Length: 99
Image 1 (cartoon, helix red, strand yellow):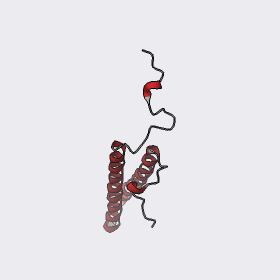
Image 2: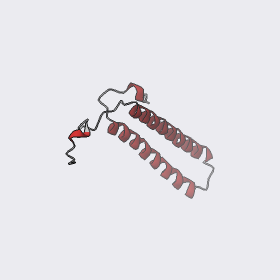
Image 3: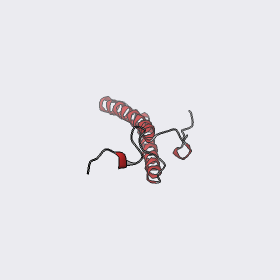
Image 4: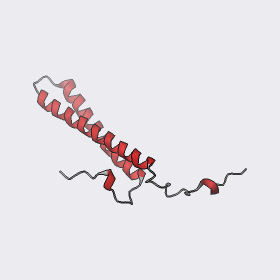
């Protein structure tokens, strides 16, 4: 399995939107696994407890990684590492508001 990139060492070209989208993809994977686990548990009448526990463990790990990654993104944002969105001016003095 490929090593997961860390958010402290991301290339400068990655935007906040790209980082959030990557975490959204992780959450979608978790959702898919949770749905499968639900179906298996709902209709299971055999002794597959170990497999169910393994799936639950993977879900918990992915959620923990996603929460950790989002916390790091928030810290970087608060530290001012992200500029304004590409389509917005850095200074809202020229935003066109009338006085």
